[in-house]
Image 1 (tube, helix red, strand yellow):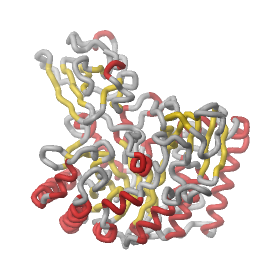
Image 2 (tube, helix red, strand yellow):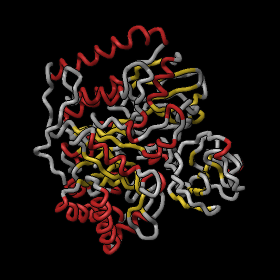
Image 3 (cartoon, one colour):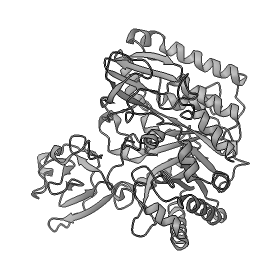
Length: 533
């Protein structure tokens, strides 16, 4: 979910979506890793761990717009560690504001009219036949209008949505739908609470004959829970409840803190912790085994305003963009482990680890932290863990711990890897087949213009900028640059040329094209005057 949570909720601002010196890391990092794994094996009794039928779920969100990132940050559907995941959710489809039905977010990337990424995603079953592949609907950006409120307020709108989404899911072959409306009654009317309940209950009834899963990503903030969810009824209708237990703090605040603490530090607001959210959802009527605990694979960063680097220190704003994701205030785990190798100082605080270097501060979850959270899941009898999002783990293994070290550690701690390092199949015999943001989504609208007649079929171009030979440069006057290019007449539009065709794109509503990052971003980060024409 485009990771915006309580921080945005409490401040109502437009916030976005063991490290030490290098010699220490190079000399003892691997030893430390195996020591932690040894503790996990000891806790679970050694040998082949006993699988918890309902407690070993690993729900992996795949942020499809990572396909457009550049260099080592580029992430394709083939990079999803599906062997570790029990469920993978394609983020995101969106709600059409006119028809109030589900529609692809990026038709060029998602559908057969372009790169056909939905089909590539569904082929993940070839690597893990037991995995459940769901389509996510919504996200932070898509929730920033009244369209979801309009949908749930009228029975005929809900019925039309249900009939359309059933056809969509079954035609493609998805295993279910994950609802990511952020959040009912948050900026909408109080009637959203009842409307959301009716929506999920009606979807449940319609999905049951087709054995489709219905899940939802929900807030961990008390005020949003109270305003937006009839917890007992919603939890009964859903197969899984994905708790967004992260982004409790961020650069929209003027003091630094870990954004996903398992327990609150001394003196901290007790409601801004993972444990509080879990206990509160259960208190309100959610069964423990349906709750799936969200774990972030990224950190939230600040620029300090003074010499104090401790938790609670004053900050002047977001931390500097990382070298790969290039997102102010957010660092992917692969950027964090590289920062460690560059000499950033690690401190293990009471509410989680953090790194400092000069005036930069970032709080995050490391291997030890995610193992602790996985053990918490088992101890509380929860349904499993949810990861936002898999594109931000060290998926290339660039820091020396192998690919996806956080996901692998969670898989180990939940008993999904035996003591030989092999992923064990999950026993789903009792399961019903009938669920943030660091980065804003990428383009959602595509149109194609043919500039002259051609008898040769032209294939859609790769979405990543590249440098073709001079004979590939189009004579069309729109094509002044190679790769994706800003539209001089619009902040929201951009295009790309391929042979005799011009592919026009439009950013999601409210976002601007930023040429320097070759992506869509919030207007304050991508003002029109900074576009490169």
